Length: 382
Image (cartoon, rainbow, N blue to C red):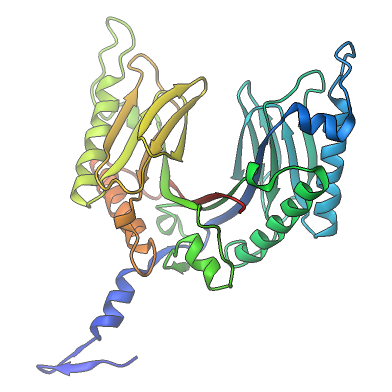
C-alpha cells in the first residue's frame, strides 16, 4: 500500500481513504439469499389456449390448467439446470427466507419458503384446482455456496427460463413482471458471540453488478434497497421502562421508548426514510411513486419512492398487544447510493443500531439484532 509523508506522518491517499469509507465489514457468518419471481395474470384466453373450455361443473375445473403449466415450468427448469422452483397459484403473498431447516409454511395470505441454498432443493406446486387464481407466481430459488457472486449467472438462467415459458404458453412477455430479490442476513453482534472473520462489501446496486457481467436490464427497471432489522422483545426489554397494566395491558411506553431511540439514532446518522413496526403484522416494503402505509390483512404494506430523500419515519404499534419482535426499517433513497454502492448506507444503519442498542442496554454477547439487507429490482421484458 502506498502512503505519502506529510509533516513526518504517513497518510493514506485521499482516493484510497474514500474507497475504504464505502466498504462495509459484515460477519463471516452472514447468510445469502437470491430468488426471482415471474408474475402474470391468469386470463380466460390463456386458459382456453392451453386446455380449452373449462367444465365448471367439475370439482376441480382448473386442475388440467395448473398441471400443464407446472409440468412445463419444472421441465424448463430441469433443462436449464435450475434445481429449485416453486409454482404458486393460490394468490398468497410469497416470501423466501434463509433457514438451516427446510420448511414451507402457509397462512391465509402468505406462503413462506424457508431453506438453505447450499443443501435444500425442491420442486413443488401449490394451487387449489377448484379455483381460478388471479395471478400465478413462478418462484426460482438460487442454490450453491456463493449466491451473491453467482447472482448474475442465475439471473440470466432464470430470464432464459421465463422466455421459454412465455413462448411455449403463448404469454405476452410484456405481461410478465420479473423481480430479482437478494438478501444478506446477519447478527449485528456476531463478533461479540465469538464469530471470527469478516466479509467485505461495497454493496453495488444489482444493475451495476450485472452491467459488469454484460447484462443489460430493460429501461423500465426499478430498484429498491432497504434493511429490515428484527428486534426480539425478551423479558429484559419488556421491563426496560415502567408499564402500568392497572387498566388493561398497555405497552405504549415500551414502543414509544424504542421508537424515540430509533428516530434519534436515524436522524443522528442521516437516515431519513424508515419505520418502526410493532403491531404483529409482517412489514412488506415495496417501491411506490406515492409513498404509503396500509394494513392488508396479515401484511403491513410500506411504499417508498427512492427519489424522495426525506420521507420521514412511520411508527406503528398496538398499545394492548405485546409483540414477539419489533421491526426497524431503513429505506435507501437515490442519494444514499454512491459511486461505490450502498456500503456507506449500511454502515450508517449499523452506527444507528449501535446507538439504539446502547440506549436499550443491549447485552451484545447474549442478545441478537438480526439485520437483513435487501436489494430488489423489477421489470417487464421489452
